[in-house]
Length: 334
Image: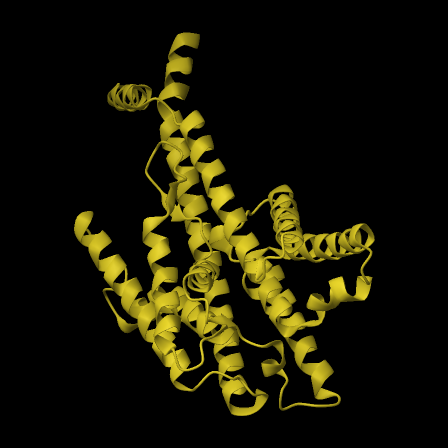
């Protein structure tokens, strides 16, 4: 009798694992969709307000070029992947399906167009948006549990696109911090960042669950700033100054908290945020500019490598799974 029970448990194990995987993936998709829709609305409003009132330095053409490149690359990538896997594209079906599918591309395109400054070279911004979306299909890690194959991208798309563009185009830089409040003054200079902080906090508490990552990143950034000032004998205020910029706030609440490319556990978020701050500190000591973007790219790449290695160590034996499934079918017939 004990042997039958043991064999039954062995047979049911893959089915139970698959049920857990389906539930986890469904939770991931629903939670991510809610977060994406809110982030897309927030960044759209910010871009419209930025070009109309705040003083964005980029031309009006820039966000449209970035969106076109992001949309086009996402649609091409999904079409090729669907064709290779003999399945319908995820954007097919209805207009709602298309809109849901393009939400990540929408966020990435607007983020790239807002944070990069390329003067009249809008092609460089389009390149950044295209590279950002292409990384989702090129750099992936298997996160399945053995019952089915699940792959997800590990590089933050917008950050990766910005990083590659900054490295390849020396004349392209990050948008000046003052552009977010160039046409404001007085109380508005305090209210606007406060709105971004409050809305970003709400979104990351309710939608992404990444508030621990934000708190760790901000605390670790302040700590490394103080330590570098002590070591180098420089004013602490100068090292802490980046934290007062609008770009830092956007980077904190809308970039490093991407649910698809950041850990979900509290410990993972703490390590992730601390690693980004440490990477930034090292780059600053090496006198490398744009340290925040480079540090995030390096940390997400390192995390992807660790996930890949962990998956290789824990991947179950396919023969054992097939045997258990066969035994499960046999028990059902009895």
